[in-house]
Image (cartoon, rainbow, N blue to C red; front, side, top):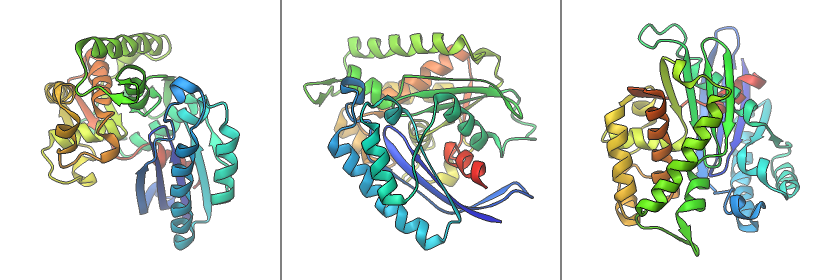
Amino acid sequence: MTRVAAVDCGTNSIRLLVADADPATGELADLDRRMQVVRLGQGVDRTGRLAPEALERTFAACREYAAVIKEHGAQRVRFVATSASRDAENRDAFTRGVLDTLGVEPEVISGDEEAAFSFTGATRELTGRQDLAQPYLVVDIGGGSTEFVVGDDTVRAARSVDIGCVRMTERHLVHDGVVSDPPIDAEIAAIRADVEAALDLAERTVPLREARTLVGLAGSVTTVAAIALGLTAYDSTAIHHSRIPYARVREITTRMLTSTHAERAAIPVMHPGRVDVIAAGALILQSIMDRTGAEEVVVSEHDILDGIAWSIA
């Protein structure tokens, strides 16, 4: 048994998993799993740089995570950074800050590496299930990018494209620092156009329509699932491996696109850090289901974090 700590730092959130991994049995026992919305990617799509205030929010979360890792006595730690830090000109400042805070150097991984970690984390528990046909299409809708991976027991093809809930919101729904409330038709059409172009790009590498089961990861997907399930409080156990029909995804996407900020914030399961980006995230999910013809999405709470943990177990 090996005690490991995995940190996933994305465009919108930074997450920690401390777990005991048993390679002999293939089991990963969670000890602590937590998330903070730090919006590291604030403005990166426009400026190409990480904002000072975004870096400080991220370093504050790292200080908290360092204490948790020390408390649990993790033997191995791996810190993985994804879309926002890949895109930023000043990512050296990010690297130095994380190293000073956690004592481990962040690895700025490629989109393909991110996709592989997500696939491992999401599908490890699905192997052998007779009710879910292979191959799987694992879709990780992040803040700055979305990863597409097709595979069965192993990855067949993967591609990362630059569409994410934060990137699409900042690019099309923010004007003079104010988020459209709610978006107008022209803004929604602009997001759809970007997403469709990205799906065309992904399909050059990944046979999206050959997959038999769509597996959705990350906060946009789990939030849509929580709303679809009618939860009054976020419940990861209820969300994990829930199966949300296309009709419900479309209904919720329409609701998010036509709601005001106040109406979205009033939804009991809505994290405050997702209120302004959930409309774009839901629209990305619906567009993927439209493109692939998926009748439902299987939602996984296990994702890149679990894949990172297994990589160091």
